[in-house]
Image 1: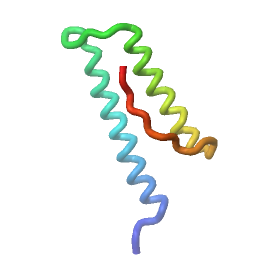
Image 2: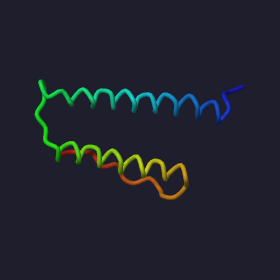
Image 3: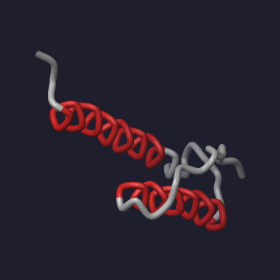
Image 4: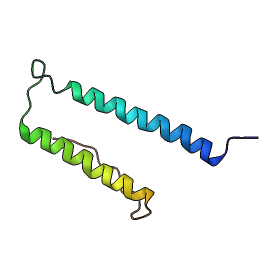
Length: 75
């Protein structure tokens, strides 16, 4: 017999959350001013995009909105 829906959710969602955390760690590496030049406006724009997508994704779990077309982030 296969995995239950709950078991599949825990497996898939757990891996995806960890992947997001890993990517945020990588993004944090970009804060090293010895290697990169960025402005406060760049930081605001990045984290605004992240917060916006996080709100939309959280709302999906609350059945408040439908998935939007994926938009690529760019400066």
